[in-house]
Length: 248
Image (cartoon, rainbow, N blue to C red):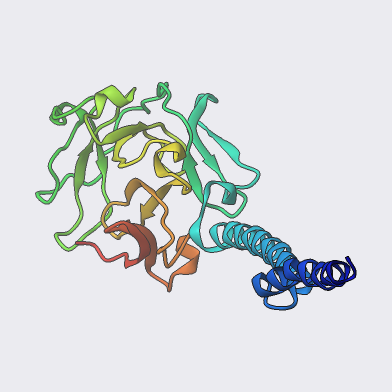
C-alpha cells in the first residue's frame, strides 16, 4: 500500500504539468502576451485603416473640388434669365463658370436682323435670304480673313428644334441676345458623374463658338481667365484646355 501511494503522488504532478506544456507549445511559450499583442495590433491596425480611409475620402473630395471640378464645386449658383425674364436653364457659379441645369422653352427670338454692310463676302442682305433654319436673321458679322459682310443666323425654341447631340440655348448675356442650337455631349451635370456639365465659349475673331461639355480631372483650366491673352478655355478631346482665339 505504501508503494502505491508513492506512485500516485509522483504521477499527479506529472499529469498536471502536461496541459501546461501543450499550451506553452501552442503559444510559443508566451501565449498570453502574444495573444494580447495580436489583438492590440489588430485593433490598432483596424483603427489606422479606418482613419486612413476617412482621410483619403476627405482628401479626394478636396482634390475634386479644387482640381477635378466636381458637382460640389459650383457654389452659390445664380440663375441666368432670358430677355423675357424666364429662366434660361443656365446658372453662373460663384467662381464664374456657367453650368446647364435644365432644358426650357426659349421665349424671345429677337428682333429683325440688321445688315448695314452687304458685301460679296456675306451670304445675305435681308432676313428673307436666311431660310436654312428657324427664325433666320441677316446680321452684320465680325470681320474675318475674307473681309466683312452680313451672314445668316438661326434660332430655336426647344431642344427638339436642334437635333441629336445639341440643345437649344436660350437668349441671355452669353448668347448675343439670340437663342441658338449648340453642341452638347451632356445636358445636365447628372450626365457627367462627379463632374459638371459646363458651358465653353471660344471667343474667336470670326464668330464665338458655344459648347456644353463635362469637366474632367485632366482639365488644365476652368475659365478663360486662366488662359493667356487671346486664348479661351474650351473643351477639346475631352479635357478643357486653353485654345487660341484665331479665326479659322
